[in-house]
Amino acid sequence: SLRATWPHAPNTALNLCASLQAATISCFVMNPVDLVATRLFHQASLRQEGPPRPLPHLHAPPAAQTQPVFYTSPLDCARKTMVAEGVGGFYRGLSANVVRIVPHTVITFLLIETMREHISRRREPS
Image (cartoon, rainbow, N blue to C red):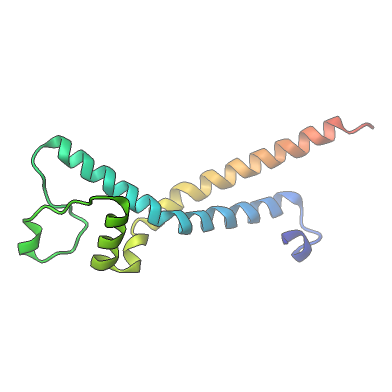
């Protein structure tokens, strides 16, 4: 635990480190899921706008780019992403996700833990 590693660190520093770790791990774990969901939503929006068009994120030869590519399910999207882009394809947009999620999570956790400590001190009998 962080408390065992840094026994004399203030609670705020420990909360900061814990929330940074949690947010970063969350981004790495959830980015593939977010990527698949985003591609499926993008596909649905293309269908609503008019005739099917190729999805721009696939790096296909020019002849293949003229043919529309559609996913039939989340698993189909994951499979096609793996084939076309490899494992790294699941982490496209990770930096933007980290820049968006980590500060939000850190601030949220720090505020919650600070309020929890403040409230518990007020409830303690003097």
